[in-house]
Length: 166
Image (cartoon, rainbow, N blue to C red; front, top):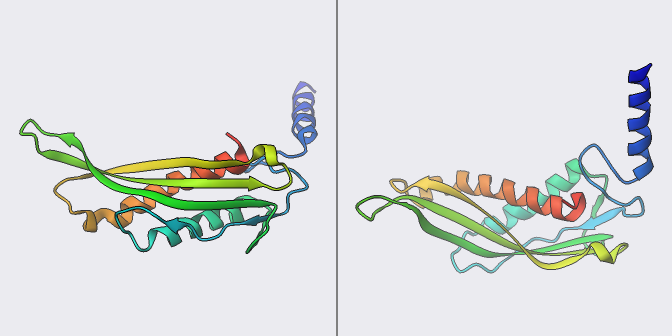
């Protein structure tokens, strides 16, 4: 009996919110569409596929994790992004003052508009993630796997900031 009451209380608590889902999103019931145009690439160092890869991965995350319909423009939610940084720097130096590890860092700037609830909107918020690699490897050799790891982190952060509101 006690177990049934706990379950019933939990269901009532979650049901009372009206906007919570088990995917961790908190999208208001009156929000139905999202616009996710392809990100612009503005970093000095060039990675020609990065903007498309981030854009597609973000679209996939929203398709899998929300009920929102993706539209080309004028969505209830709009996410515009630009890649502002794509940098490599030494992250660990040996006793001989030689880089033992390098760090690839990607920075993305996001403008998020919630047309139905403007108080949730933000402009120019930066998201950054990095991955380290052994300096005995060239960037070309590890770039693909590093970018996949970095993109996953950035997508998670953008998703949480826009619809999970963490």
